Length: 371
Image 1: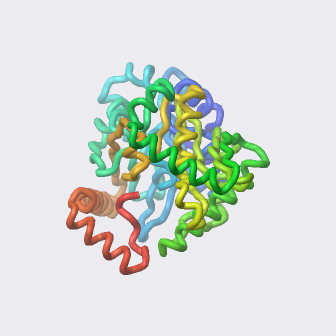
Image 2: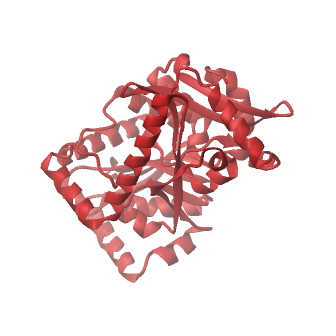
Image 3: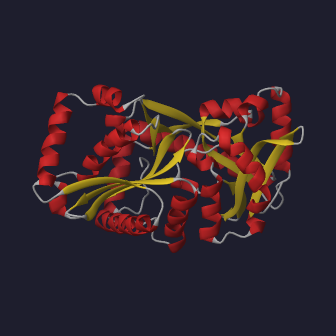
């Protein structure tokens, strides 16, 4: 186990090239989080498993304190929809199930000053292939990741947009065009990207204010993370402009031959909403992405209209909670109860309706169960 990310950079990059399938597995993304948050090395843990002297698995964790507990978990929290260790699955598959489980338990035992290892949001298929399920059991989560996966734009367009949808898109596009010149662009890392990201966060802040929700991106380190990740983790922005002004943004990270959408924003002006700039930007982003050679677009967890319209896959997720101390065992049991309760609320119309009314009454201070 290592505590400085620099000490595992060589092993990480050797594994990442041929084996990275999730945005959360990228060295540049985790490095950006550590730098932006000024996370001390003492709070970092990088577990590396080797075979014949070469790295075969790498698990990056950060130690946090929550309600008096010392918890090791993913670095970037809720900012990504899915997580997993970085593993050479072909070589790892030559190891027996029992030996995989032993190696994971041995790695977790190296975590000093820690009560609990909590690993939520792991794709179920990866949890099985990695041996984590065999080692720790795990629980299926109520949330899943929504993905649009097509070989080209023509296939996506034919399957996801019917005659009525195309008519609506044309009408909304005409309303926007009636206000000025519309432009769409794909922006990579650079000086221009930083300014667009600032605009994106300003749009989001105004939106949260209207909804009565605390802005989760208000902290400087969070904004710094997204700018650093843009540079170091393969960031891509889809940007819609009206007379040169940014009116909608989609922030993505490249990984595994596709795009992972982390944040979307649109201009807060009520006059602008009639043209649905967010939907118009997404329409152009889908076309540009699939025509540009990307194989999928991961839109993250939670239900939304855009996911129902564009996504043809829902990837189930699992969570693992491995206790290292007696108080950790109590916390693990509590997490299981909480996750079951969340699933009950999401899947029970009456409970969810009650939840929404409470959320409206208390000004959005209750975080949504459907992101």
